[in-house]
Image (cartoon, rainbow, N blue to C red; front, side, top):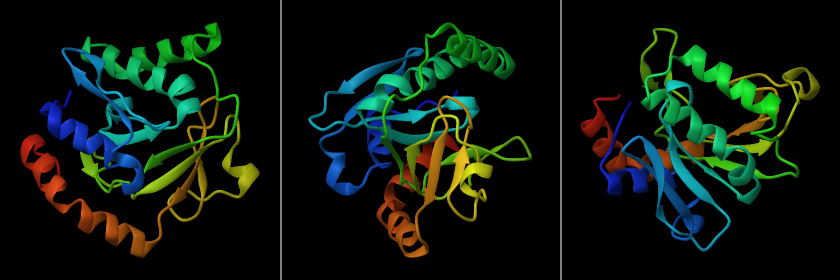
Length: 196
């Protein structure tokens, strides 16, 4: 499990938000096998560096996502820190949905992943910076077929099911801007973690 110094993890977590929202966000960091609140915010967003499914990326949820989606993200990382396999984690998360521990969002909402520092497991099984900046809207139980989604090319649905998200990719100029604004942080994260 990738660990970062607290201040670096805090900076990376809020890097997912538009600049105007970053200072007011709450931040959770992974320390000693659990997420802890590193900062209480003043706006509706809570940010973490997610380790969900073995990936490594900053994401920020509004109040509804913090209430309904964030608990599964937190539990996923904690179970992996404890040494559980990916299959076991997915089974326990599915059981949590079936048992009512995890809930789909009850209203529309938004989550941000505008950082270019999104490291996802590729086909080779290795983490790499390969997910472009994007915005997510809660879309429980929608599928690509319902919205003519085309992953990676247009808006599309990620994780169809109770925590499904309608993904809208940032435009090319926005991506270039986010990359330029995040260059120093990217260098620090990649130097610390060995990721590329």
